[in-house]
Length: 265
Image (cartoon, rainbow, N blue to C red):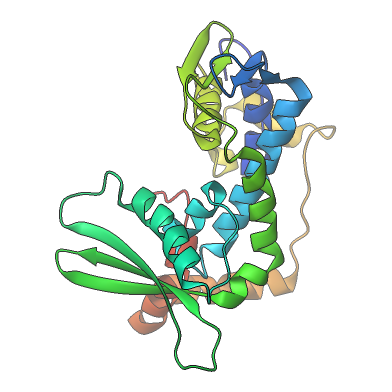
């Protein structure tokens, strides 16, 4: 809701689409102080590609270390894992960004390792906090995947695009930036200015007019079919998370912890 205007969206995907359209209205991206702006459909295409890639990264984060994955957008193509000199330089660039602005007593160390001489090497991400280290492995096979190629294709478009004086502008407001992620974050933040967002978890939370506009009006409402399989699956999840047996609940949380978003605590 903004002012007297109200708009209903059914899920996060539709919300992101709406905010993106709003954010790019009258938006211009200047890669450098003297460069011509990127705007209109060209800017929309870049933002949509960025959102697709971040969705890929979110999906992959349940399998691989998220902080490392996020750095791939800003990185050139990985060299051959067997090329020690090139890999040292490549990993050092990521390591430098990961260690930037970390709290005292924490640090990252990246290296190439393998379990034995015959296996495909992997990247080891070692995170140290007050002398206690935790290692995360990124298998070499990942860099031959279609997901990595999609990330790399987008990275090639934006890396090296920005230089001194780069900024993003929307209307009369502007912000200096150093990378594309900052530009998108700022634009979406601007789109949210003055917006009042409400989430409804049940029909009982709505006023009568809201209930009519979203659910009771036949021309606007959505009907979803619930099958017996859905009820069985829901019962299993409910029993796992709310039952008296602690061990299945602990196992579920440990397995799915990195997939959790929008926690309502």
